[in-house]
Image (cartoon, rainbow, N blue to C red; front, side, top):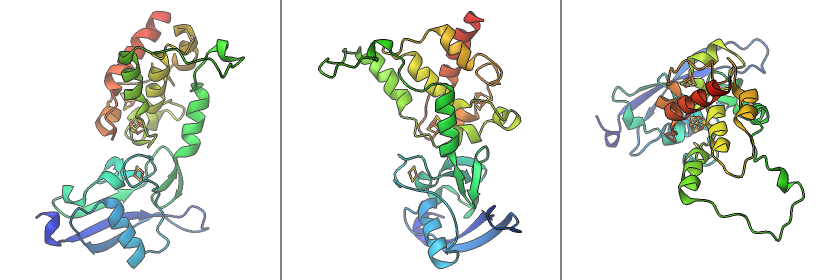
Length: 245
Ligand code: SF4
Ligand code: F3S
Ligand code: FES
């Protein structure tokens, strides 16, 4: 049955507000009529408007750009604003908050705290000592277009957290950096403006909470809504770090 037919959709949504004393996690079911081109995000808006005014979930851009609407949709981390309800032929859709992040309430999690800590841990900025005395009149050096393309490919990460939530290693190791961190490191590692050496990166990711803890489970590669090249980049970083070891 297609989304054009106005079929009934059943949403099973995890409800829990850790801020409310005594509240317990539970699944609540809501039924709505499917509309043409409906996304999970649009369905959530309708559910909130009609049945559950306190329902918590996040969104900003509604276009797969801001990374705020990540959630587990029928068992798989994905973006609510980019997931069509028509994708689910049975019309039953379960929604859970992304694991691995602090729960704010219902489907809303605090990815910001995690991403900030990850950025600080890998020192996610260009390290260039010659820029300590910045000369604003100086033109930036030109970059080889192939290198710029490779950096751009990794810069497309929207920090949605789907890769981290799909990673079994992250479930077992609380301090595991996670695929988003590896993609950031891979991005700086190929940037000719960054003067860090392999030994510097080894200090950041050369342990079991870093690239040697990755068990190549590839949930990151399978779920990344931006199709970042997790498998090849993580393998590359691991080979590089093994040479330093
Ligand atoms: Fe999301 Fe992909 Fe970035 Fe992970 S690497 S945070 S899945 S965009
Ligand atoms: Fe996790 Fe991806 Fe490695 S899912 S174990 S970071 S390949
Ligand atoms: Fe921005 Fe979904 S609302 S990515």
